[in-house]
Image (tube, rainbow, N blue to C red; front, side, top):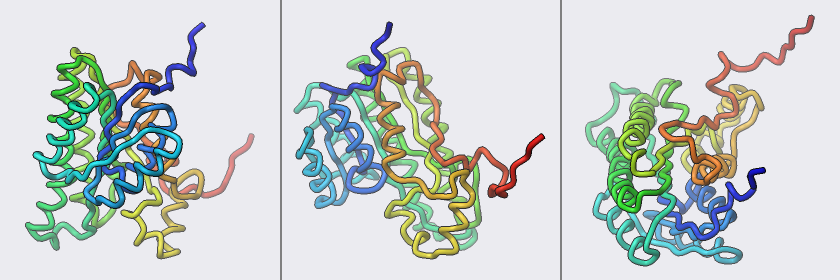
Length: 266
């Protein structure tokens, strides 16, 4: 009989988490560390990256680096330094994202470029840098952060949604390119999660309740619930999963509109 518990064990693995300073990235770092991985906590915010690493070292193993996800040289530096220190990288997770909520006709060129630079180009740089390393070592798991907005949209999220859809497609494409080298590539597709990015929405009770009602659980998700999905995709429990986007949205995209609360019997 298989030892299924061992499939989830990340002891001895080295994980890089870009965006580890807050939200889903921080939760992912905590989840990976709790399963035994050494985590390189990278973030543009130095204090936040350090705080996440320090919170892990109370019971696990971690370090921190300052990295701008939209800067290819920074992402390459993260890759090179992590490899130099640990000789390999087994898991690579990237979560940073920017959303400028505006109608498309109101977007400026500068705003468009900002969203594309972080969300789409940042994902591209991450795949290039970490992917090349993992192809050489012939193993590894890469996890990006897409969004349910890749498949369902609302006014003001067109550009953000386009980048998240692009990430989902890049994941499929890259998975097809590196599978022969023993590398897996996936993404998580979160729904409405309580993070710094969604904090302005949460402050408005009407929006908070409306969004909650779109899920089958009538609540927003927690970063830890996405971090757990990331840890699963990183582990050997997902050894035959690649090129997919794992939906973590409380059923939002599975149902047609908010639940009515009605039940049908016969």
